[in-house]
Image 1: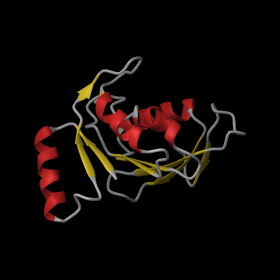
Image 2: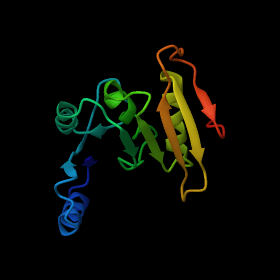
Image 3: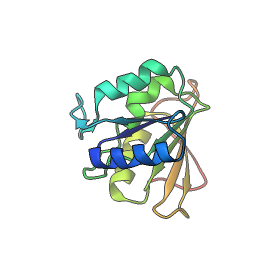
Image 4: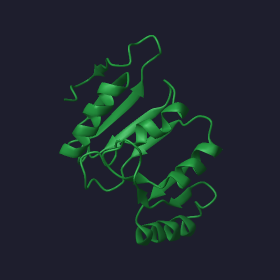
Length: 151
């Protein structure tokens, strides 16, 4: 498991917690300061740290998007485009805090760019959406929705 954290102080807190719980062999926690990405509307995690993860994984089963801090509209957008090539129809993408306006904007943008199936779980504290990629036979600009609309 890999985790990206932009805040150095929080990274250190989490690194200590992982060590104390004996999880250091299972979780690689990377300090990944935010930086500009070409053609992006917000900063995202360090390209060097993202490349570190990409070099060590051929397939990603789960992407939990709970950062970076949602301080700009598309702060979390890059998660899907950056790791898209390592995802498949069996991968699960979870967007946390999905009731917030910035995350709704990210969902809308992902929905316009990728062929996705989205299932919303509004009973979680701030909302969550579970997302799966649709197969190659589906047109990439159309999304299939399940169990609730994601505007």
